[in-house]
Amino acid sequence: ISLLVSQPSINISVAENILLSVAYTGETSPVIEWKHTSASGTTKIAEWKSGVYANISSSYKDRVNIYDNGSLQLLKVDFKDSGYYLVTKLSMKTCILWSSSLPF
Image (cartoon, rainbow, N blue to C red; front, side):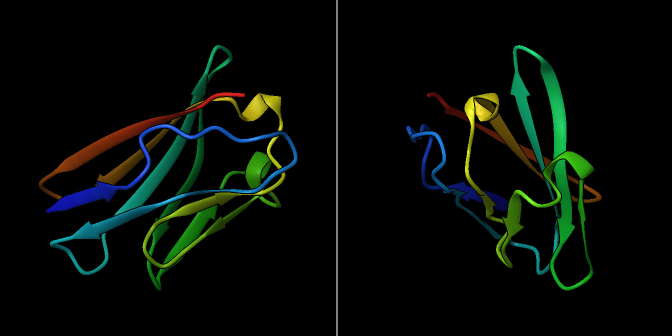
């Protein structure tokens, strides 16, 4: 089971949209969890399982899109979005972590 990430670090301007791309192999429909970590703490953005459910936290409800491969799009980013993004692939046997910084 593996989780593939194409962009370890991303620079973007305020008010732009950003796509945090991932892809997974080895499991047909894992649970993917996204979190944001900054100086203010860690916030869960979403938990998603392809074709089954997408639980998006209320603070991100109108600000994100989640795609079938688990990638996350943040809409109209702001300074508060600066920090690290952690994607976790959850399964019964493994937990794979990845983080990326989004500096402004």
